[in-house]
Structure formats: structure tokens, C-alpha cells
Amino acid sequence: MHKPSLTLTILILSTITSLTNATCITSRQAHTIGHTWAQLVSNYTDTLALNALASTFTDQADSVTTLIDSASQPQTPLKLGSLTFPSKEAYMQLSSQQPSVPFQVLNTWHTCGEVSVCF
Image (cartoon, rainbow, N blue to C red; front, side, top):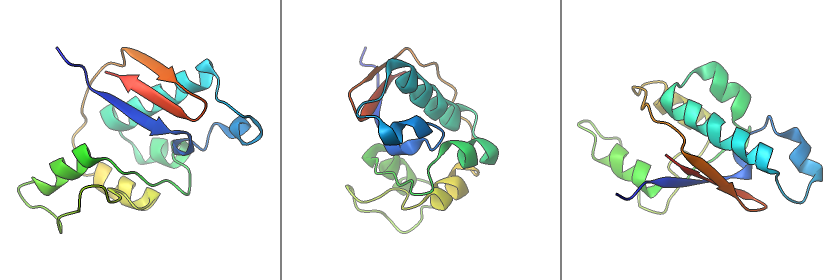
């Protein structure tokens, strides 16, 4: 069975402040990024989003765009490849209206600037 994964950029978390002077993220930082993202999806709160997302947060995810566009009352359809959430505020507004999506993080991998999460 194919397990979905998601690649996250380092800019997602403003709480990892030590990254500004580092060249690459550590395994511990990658774990924190992956598990914080999982909490944003599976147990969203505005407080978590305010603390975890950088002020410059944006997100481009064609899978999420497809889900949004196929909703029973879709917004103006988004073009695949465009920003799904052009700002932290846009992400928070839509996420606060959605039910939680429970899942378990099975593993995380990282490069210098990306974290992949298998769930």
C-alpha cells in the first residue's frame, strides 16, 4: 500500500529560531517540524498555528487545492501549481473551519532545507 508523504519547507516553523545561523537542520529539528505539522492537521488550534507558522508562511499543495476545489461549496477554483494558502492568515481561516484529520507520523526524513513526513 502506498503511504502518502508531504514535503515541508523549513520556513513553516518560526519556533526553530536557531535555523537562521545554521546551514542545515538537525534530525531533532526535522522531527519537531514534522510532528508540529502533524498537530496542525490532526489537532488544529489557532494558538498552535500562531506559534508554529512563520509570519511569511505560504503553502502550495496541489492535493489540498484539489480537495478545496471539489468541496460542496467551493471557493473560486485555484489553478494547480498556484499558492493554496498565500498567507498565514489564509491558512488559519480555512483550517479553523475544517474537521481534524487524525493520523500518526510513521517517520520523518530531512535534507538541509526540507522535511518529509510519512503518515
